[in-house]
Image (cartoon, rainbow, N blue to C red; front, side, top):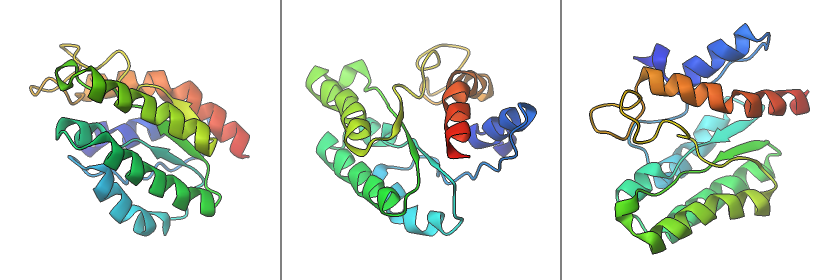
Length: 167
C-alpha cells in the first residue's frame, strides 16, 4: 500500500527528524526512463524544491539499450538544470545475467551523469536490499515494506544533507 511506499516512508522519517517536508510521489510502478521523461514537465508543476531521480531499473529489466536510458536521464537532467532544481541522482546496478558489458555501461552511466550535471549522487538505490530474501517481494527484485525501510535508512543522511544545503 502507499503508506509503505518509498516517498511515504521517507517523508515520515524526515518529519520525525524535524524537517517540515512534503515528499511527492511522482513514481509509477514499472516505469521506464521514457515514461519518466514524458511525465517530468507535468510533475514539475508541483514546484518541488529538489528532485530524487531514481529511474532506470525497469529499463535494465527490459533489456533497453543503456544509451537510450542515458539519453532519457540526460534530457530529464537538462530540464531540471534549466529550472535550477537540485537533483539527487540515485544509481542502479544491472543484474548479473545481463552480462558484464551491459552491466558496466549501466553502472558507469549514473556516476558520469552525476558528475556532468553536478548533482548529489547516491550510488545504489537498493543497497543492502537487492536480491536479499526477506527484503524483496516474490519476484525477488522489488523491495517489500521492510526492504523500503532499509532503503530509507540508507538514503536518509544524503537527503538530510540536501535539505540543509537547500535552506
